[in-house]
Image: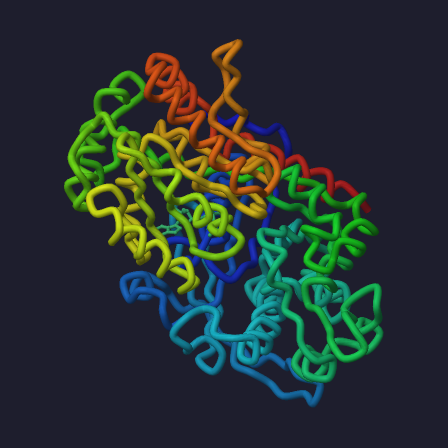
Length: 493
Ligand code: ADP
């Protein structure tokens, strides 16, 4: 991996968010919180990642942590105070500080429902700034992720304005706008202890009765980023804006899009121990066939490497465009095609895919669970990966697929549009197959185009496999863009 050594001075950045691989991960946010700090420490940055000390963090990681201190912190409007403990570990030059409080973080999962989550992340946002002062580690930038860290910019400019950390600038990154932390105004006033003037329409007020934590954070942040340029544009429209399009349009001059990368060490088909036959660009075409056979064997599919194998690795929710897949599923299948689905989520989709499996034994596998190892084997063994999302802020699965020489078939939205160039037959160029409007027929058309190329012009297909593997999907580029933003912000008065 080569990084441009930045000529800029050392930047101190505090990442604040609710999940981070390998400690706790439920989705793409966890991947970004892991990979971006690691890329930034190669770019002359000191990075601390601040996370809740959830009970569900595996014991082996807890055993590696050291206790860095504790204090009591006032939080609520009635002056109620809470214990804040700091547990720390260091991995590859990134420092991870976990905020310990059993009352808030002893639940089984990170997210348990808004009733518990609102107080939990009010406490987390305030404690994140408090520990930076306590540790006497004052960052240039506090980089906040999603609604769970949404109150940080508000605390920074109010309760912490006259403290050392108050000199930091703030960035809020939107990974998923669907979740915003909305609750009754009085409930939030009690738990935050923040001044009343913040509960006005330009900041946190959502309606006569409700307040919105993320809305407030976006208003008070010095910069807002989201995880692709297209999504940055889309969220200023009502279809994608999740009720905040007007607010984001108002703040558009501080909004930009920086596409995610993937960790190219974690996702490396040449060294991936989970694969039946690891491969690089030169061996991909032949070895992917071996991986396909191993996948077919593991999943009870007919073993035949001439089959066009379509993979789908996804949370099974409306966001992921599964109603389109559902609508055309019978037409996707033919005697040359197999489909492998890995995911969990909405029972409606789980049941539908289970049905298609039972009706098409040997040709369809619906593996309804979360399984990291199988995900790797699908990325290696499938020919194409389907990502027909209704909306997709960035999307990681299409990036992983390309890195593994699996051709993505995607809808042109958000990061899918920004990262997958459509196949251009005239110039034998492009990375995958795409369709624009959210229509099942268009999805079917894209799949049929892909299958036709695979079956009838295999050399051209193989060229695309190699082009995809060659494409730079690492964090290097994006980390440079974040660094430029940090530099720009840090130099502002
Ligand atoms: P989102 O964050 O919206 O779920 P992304 O595409 O940004 O979607 O990230 C999804 C990540 O989760 C990828 O790393 C993908 O491989 C992984 N993933 C999704 N579903 C599963 C599953 N059932 N088993 C294993 N990994 C999964």
